[in-house]
Amino acid sequence: MSAAPPVPVRELIRSAIADHRSELAGLSFLPELRYDRSVFATCGQYDWFSGQVLYCLVRALRPSTIVEFSTSSGYSTTFTALALRANGAGVVHSVDIDATAQRSARAWLERQGLMPHVELHLGDCRAVVPRLLDGLDLLFIDSLHSFDLTVWYLEQVIPRLAPETLVHVHDIMPPEARVRIHGGPPYPPSPRPARPPLSHLVKRAIWLALHLRNPNPFPARRPVELLPLETLAVHRPQAPDELPTIDGNYFEEAVLLRELLRDAPEDELCYLHREMTRHPELEPQKYAHLDRIQRQDRHGQPLEWNDALWLRVSALQRSSGHDSVRDAIRELQRAHQVGR
Ligand SMILES: C[S@@+](CC[C@H](N)C(=O)[O-])C[C@H]1O[C@@H](n2cnc3c(N)ncnc32)[C@H](O)[C@@H]1O
Image 1 (spheres, rainbow, N blue to C red):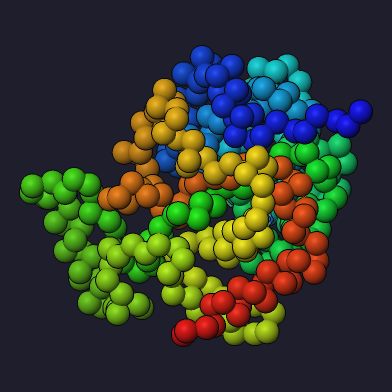
Image 2 (cartoon, helix red, strand yellow; image 1 turned 135 degrees about the vertical axis):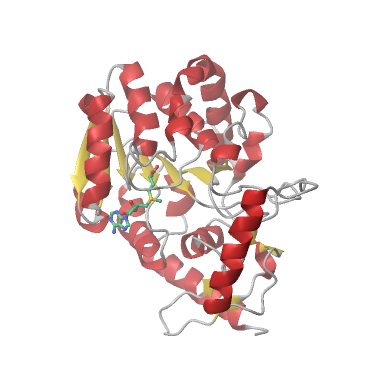
């Protein structure tokens, strides 16, 4: 008899939320402290909705071993470790190359009494993670988002995992995402206030003064313009083995994954942005006013930050062999050179 197919990732998320949402009120201290530098000395950008889903999934799946890269000051680690503590078992191995960040993470996690469920590793994830992969149940990726780090985990980590293993990648946009252009002033709030507050005018004056001294390196761009991802301008690769860079943050990882996941079966992945509207009870935007980064444009489209992808390793394994990754890179290079 053949084994039952794995539960679709979307269903897994929905049932985990249904089973554990009553516990989520206890997590609200996290987004409230999110930008308190005396607590989280270095600033990663993990978000409230993703954090709640992470908590529920760890509660539902009861993993023994989780590997996270990277820790920063332990913000995302806290959601995971709280869920492991509620489960009464399990450990998250969390890796970061930044000693200051890990000191901050350790101090915070110790104060929270979470260290029995956390093992912190200081170092380059490329050196540390390969020895943590045996028996891994869940992989959490929120690191440099660069091209070389992405190619590294696609080629060196993903092929070593069991196909049903769940992977979480943060700061990945769904294909319908829009992006913010670098170098412009912040988005106008929506709806725009009738009269901007004085503080805004003062900030704008300072911005203008600085801007006149140090002109925008991208002066030709309209500052608040938002572009669909597909139409984004890209910069030609400078070397044969390089991916084109694309305006906005965090694109190298996102673009490469999008290319590799283009034909992945729907059941094997879930972009959290698409789930947000189904779960108003989780109040995805409740702490948006505390965020330094806006997550949606005026059209309600997600911006480049803070969206997250959950997927099964099988979705990537099908396409992340050395040859496929190289092919996807070549394809991207070809596609983005055309028409420039
Ligand atoms: C986006 S932050 C992580 C945010 C974190 N998950 C949180 O919730 O606060 C990215 C982190 O990746 C770390 N990093 C960058 N390159 C790394 C590498 N090669 N190995 C390990 N960590 C790295 C940085 O030091 C930084 O702390």
